[in-house]
Structure formats: C-alpha cells, structure tokens
Amino acid sequence: MDFEKYDVVIVGGGPAGCITGEHIKHGKVLIIEEHQEIGVPLQCAGLVSKKGVEELGNPKGCVNTVRGAHIYSKNNQITVGNEEIRAYVFERKIMDKDIAIRTLKNKNVHLLLKTHGELLVDGKLKDNKLINNILGDKKLNLNFLKNGNYNNDIYGLSIKHFNKEHNIFPKIIIGADGARSCLGKSAKIPMKREILSGVQIEMANVSNIDDDFVYVFYDKNYCKDFFIWIIPMGKDRARVGLCDSENTYSKLLNFIYNHPVASEILKNAIPIEFSVGALPIGYLKTTVKNNLMLVGDAAGQVKPLSGGGLYYGAKSAKICGKIADEYLTNDYNLNYLKNYETLWRNEIGSEIDFGLKFRKILKRMDNKSIDMLLEFIIQNNLLNIINEKGDMDTPSIIIKDLFKKFFKK
Image 1 (cartoon, rainbow, N blue to C red):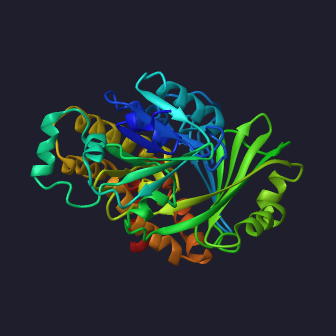
Image 2 (cartoon, helix red, strand yellow):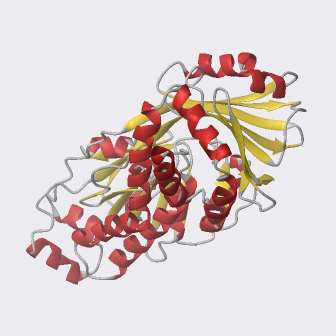
Image 3 (spheres, helix red, strand yellow):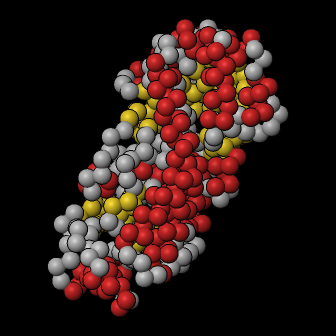
C-alpha cells in the first residue's frame, strides 16, 4: 500500500475522526483505527441530545428516546422533563459504523483497521523528497518555504500496519485519538486537564425502570467527583455507569447493590457487557501545532457537566474538516490551520468555560448542599422554568438564573 499518496492522515476512526474526514472533499484522506472494529470497545453512555443527533447526521442505532431525567440527591428527588423528547439513546457500535460507512462514500477517503499511528517529531525538511511529500505538486506552495513557515519541525507519522512500519509526511495530521491523545503528548502540547475514569455495565432483565427518563444520582457517598447514571435502553435493558477520580469499579458495584433506589430498579438485572473509558474535563491550551490538528476528546471538546462529547465533537469535526479542505485547495501557509481553533472556540468555548467554572462549585458542594439545592427547586416551583428553558447542550442558560436565586435565598 502506498501510504505516501495521502494528503491527510486522521488517527482515530470514531465519530470525530470520521466526520472530519467526511468534510475534506479534496485531496486523499486516510483514517487509521487501532482496533479491529469500528465502535469497539464501547466507551460511551450513548445518550445524545436532539441537536447532537442532527450534528452527527442522523445516524442509525437509536434504541430508545427519553423525555427527561429523574435527578436524585442523597435525600431528595426531582423530575425534569415533559412530553417532549429531549434525547436519544444509541447503540454506539451501530452508530459509529453507520457514520464510518457514510464517510467512506467519499471516494477520496480510505480506512485502515488494526493500524497504529505515532507522531514523528524530528521530521524537518532535509531533502527534496520530504518537501514533495508535504507540499505536493503545487509549485506555488514553495512560497511557504520562502516565508519561513517550515522553520519548526513538521510532524510526520509512523504507521504500523500488520507488523510493518511506514514513515510518512502528509500535509496534515489530525489527532482524533481520544482523551489521552498520544499525538498531542508527542507534540508536547500541554495536556493539563482533569481525566476521570469511567466504568459502565449494560444490564438485561431490568424490569423496574421508567423507560422514558434517565436516572441521575448526585451522592458523594457513592461518587465523589462526578455523578452516576442509569440510562434505559428499552426492552428491559439499561446502562449503569459512573465517572470518578478513583476506585470506579468498586464504587459502581456498591451503588448497584446498596443504593436504595438503584438496588430496587436493578434487583433482577443481569450484567451482559462491561466497558471502561476516560473522560477529559477541560480543553487544551492549543489544538493546532504546525501541521497537527486535534479534534474531539483529544482536544477536550467535551461538556464538563455531563461528560458528553458527541455533539461538541461532531460540531468541531466539521470545522476541522472544512479548514483542512480549504488549506489543501488554496495556497495558504500553515498558519491558516489555526483558523480551526478560532472557529471551534467561538462555537462552544464559552459554554465549556461556564461548565468548568460551575463544575468547581459542584465539586465543593457536599450532600447537604446538594439536598438544599433540590429542595430549593421544589419549594420555589422552578421545575416549569427548567423544563421551558433547559437545554442539554447549553446548560448555562438555566443554571445561571437558578444559582443566582439559590444563593440569594
């Protein structure tokens, strides 16, 4: 296989990587995925907002719809939602494959499974062959060299495929390689952010559940740094999971068997699938360095309050693909790629910033404070306002007003 023919190599075949490739209409694009199957292993709860489903391109794989959430603190409970469908529950294996199939309908995009990519950080332009690999056949692109845009290292990629290693220098490398982004680390992009460990069990024979609502639990006795969820999948199935800073598996089992509400919902349930993952909280200082761009979880494009990354990741992936495509089809220098960073931050940066600030407040709140917050919502009849103005993708709209009232009481 001729790896050197590709203008763009995307490392990571999840939704963010595939949607990025889908929006690169010119040049040759290679998506590499280290696993042997798209959508495996499962590392997501699979709950997607209405806007998120649209942003993902209305993929296949929906197994249930939900109208809201039953939210529990240690001693209180509220129900948010009404007759309107708020979110969709997806079988991620089906969804991810459908997005990949759609992407590969673009004849300029190819996919390789069981293929690993590592960044080459010493790829300076030392000879004409490397220059040709990066610049291609457009003679005008040689102006890049005159302008000094390649004084720094240009990243190459070491691709390992079926025990063979190929070192290549594509024009653009895109890291869609998840929360711990090996490409970002290799490029020495500061990765200072909070990484939580996630664990989830899919359970069958779940007969005591309201299929129309997600269950969310804020109880520091069971989960210190995030929250716990039970997501109904329909047909007596549910996903039960949590994210926390340590001991996540033992905490999840303790919740399943000992929490008064969960143990009743799940008392006859049978575990049928176990999954783990990492949740990045906080985006990176930069997501573009030389010819490397980061997208999705690799860039920290995740909702800090819910951990959802599909909506933000898909929105940012479209921007990433568009900027990469414009770079390939015009005589721009490498600085043009930085437009991606500007555009995605303009779209979702303020909401992420708000989520990070509010998350600091939530982490300081103990069970008593969380109980008081839910009691305050109940006593002041605020559920109607939450149902009217609440939005999974822009929670700042309702949370700002809610907390102003709460702290003034």
